[in-house]
Length: 371
Image (cartoon, rainbow, N blue to C red; front, side, top):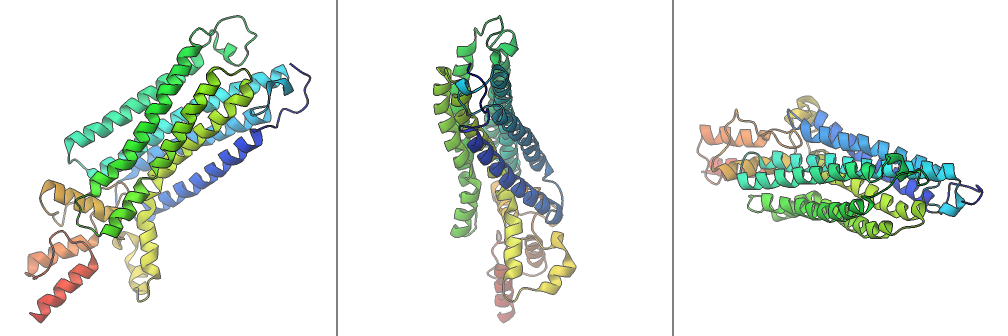
């Protein structure tokens, strides 16, 4: 290799910039989701958030790994690096690639947990499908991580190629990269489309169906990243200039990782957005907002969707003492409780059984008073 000039350069700064911007954005979203769980949640719903936070924590280590790799020459050409810089950069690139797969695994578990808590115990076949997609993705990713560090014997030969030994299963690692990327893209698309079937038959407005489906379909972006990453695997398999060629793979892998976490966190922030929107509406009762507390002021959001889905799927209405624990931790809405109390105490013409909005209840009460 040529004498050392500067290790940091090439596409390394781009890797750092994109990686840390995505980390910052994801951190903000995770913080907002945590705030929503703490302040707008009555109980439950923490498992999916915990899995998302595990994915985020591994993602932080991933960004640190790529930072060290870029400092020692990731993104730069091998000819510009010393032997020490090359081996250090390669070491941390491979560590970063492995943590990417681990974080994605945690993120997929969080997405499935999100969908399962909205769906509840209904539709056993669909639940089993989600379990299969989750388990197969985790198994495939962890197998790939193991192969990454066992493709050479001794493992250090992976980043120190001059060591005596062999890399007999290096091609196996390339094949696993193709399979892992392609299957990951398929699962991302499947999980992004799945919510459409959850809310298809719900008695909610068309605009709300479209809005919630769009929020929950954010996984499409991670699927696109997985496709691009899989294409980059083909370049790496035959690569000679490894520190330079491996960087785009690392970049798209990290982007896919962050998109998975964002996709499972943004929909859980919906109740907070609706809560803030309702407070900003003209004529909103600020006094009640201050005295009743957030847990008693449930926003019309994913918790209502989940309650409606559970009730319609099981062919019955929820009782006043029954809780539907949903992904964002919010139990069946206060409005549903009020509606059921009204139905129990007085027969109100025009009150829809599956309605859970304040306007429907008020309209029904007005109709009853006129009668």
